[in-house]
Length: 130
Image (cartoon, rainbow, N blue to C red):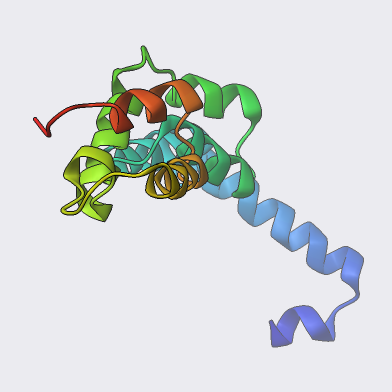
């Protein structure tokens, strides 16, 4: 950084561009690999596909690539919703009684996690955890 500060900005940006080109040529800077790894990590942590996609977009990944690596048939969102409900003791995993106020709070938790309303409602209406 000190070397960059000593030079004019145009020269410094040229150096940075050269470094990026070299890293891409060596295969060390690859958005597709990064996105696939982060999506796999998110699935391992039972994150919803919407949450994974939002995180990838925030990191600067192209929307088409984020859509591609988070493509889901619905099962990943269901697994993520059940895992979150179990972890946070929501819906059927709640120890106490289930009332409308607790259901509303649980819906909010699931919505903030990127779970769709339909899937969240299905999880919360389960009779017993399975």
